[in-house]
Length: 326
Length: 306
Image (cartoon, rainbow over the protein chains, first blue to last red):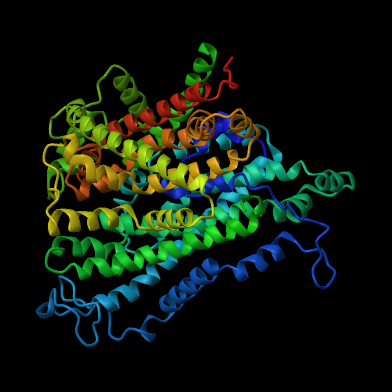
């Protein structure tokens, strides 16, 4: 493995979206694409690919299974929250404000007399939507831009590298406060748009590096010698071998986007009431924390568990895709 | 060395211009800057036009940017709309945030690197798995949740600390600094662990052990010095992020630092304050990065900057 830290370029690559956003980025950046071992063959006699190898590992990894289970449950309750919570998260009864657990409200009531359990369950939808959509957007933009820059090199590559430097210099929460403070629309889309805007450089840098490594492989030279077009080389030969680091970083980033949405909502610029989001609930509960700590603890716990599940999933995927770390 | 520094300084210019321009654009998109001056009701058009002329806001955006940057480099960061010079706000805000950042970086170095070395040397043992799991949990809990929980436990339940900071002295900033550092601290631990575990098997460590050097000397002089390079990179780039990310911590503990001023500036659409503070933060980030690269040469004598 090349001693990457010696390149001055790497200095800025260390921290992406304000520190927390790029967990695993620099570790994952050292992944080498497709260290497939040709001598190993599966039961059918076919050579096992990196992916089937990784899948075999993942199926036996309890961390992966546990986090996948948590994520499946979260997706389920964000699709059908009424399956496990009765009533609406917006029906509140001030007479019950700050009350403790009661039948039908196992988590008690918050400062406005809303059912904390119902609100916590309904809050999952916001987090999951923001996390998935933001990651999808970031991966699409980032890997296309970074991949093309890495493949073609030249002027656009330099321009893109400087552009990512510029984005890395802006603190994320700050950018969010400035941009989202003007937004009046109370949906998840401005928040997602902001995350894509500030998140793509992180993925683009990873994708660029991994495409540059992949394009030096012999099979790419061979394909070129056989007269394959650029698009064929990129899609058939480079992309499958360069995508692993992007997937790892994206999975971990998904967790951090969920945390970022909650942080922005806590600061009052992400989603605003009457939307239901864990960040809003935590923010609303903090003034009453002396009398009703449960209204703070449950949404906080749900948020932490969700982020933890995605980060552990990313960790497990990285271990499976990079045999060198074992 | 001199030429390298010069080249790096020149490379910093486009990033600096780009980042400040981006913020300048964002802030201008933020809304009508004079609207904040007229309080709750909307401005009378004649007054608004006059105010805009007075502040030079009727000129095209690029011209405003050039004028503003020209002023910044002569030390004039403009006036907040309440009449206070932005530099005055900075003089009160930056010392507090710098102290907070120092506390945070101190925790990152002391706790993060210690835990990283301990786990890296004992890879696969229960200590290692335990610390690794703990770092995952710390990374997963967003800073504002950590902050609110510590404030609730230490400040309100157990009365160990005052829940809100009064003067911003070092002893008051210990808990907020720990909260600010928490995520990066976990990251430093993981990074050090990976790096130590990787270098533990290298030839020079085997040689050092074979020479009969005591274990602590092998670890500190040989292993640690070589393993710290990625960690130093991370901490260096993190300084800028910590100062910019202090908004959340400062809000929770009511610390009147950079984050507080920025938050107020954004809420009140105080463009000069926001752009001024962000400009300084971007500069801090860039300079910290440069210093980190120069530190490489100290840590690793193989690196020479021509």
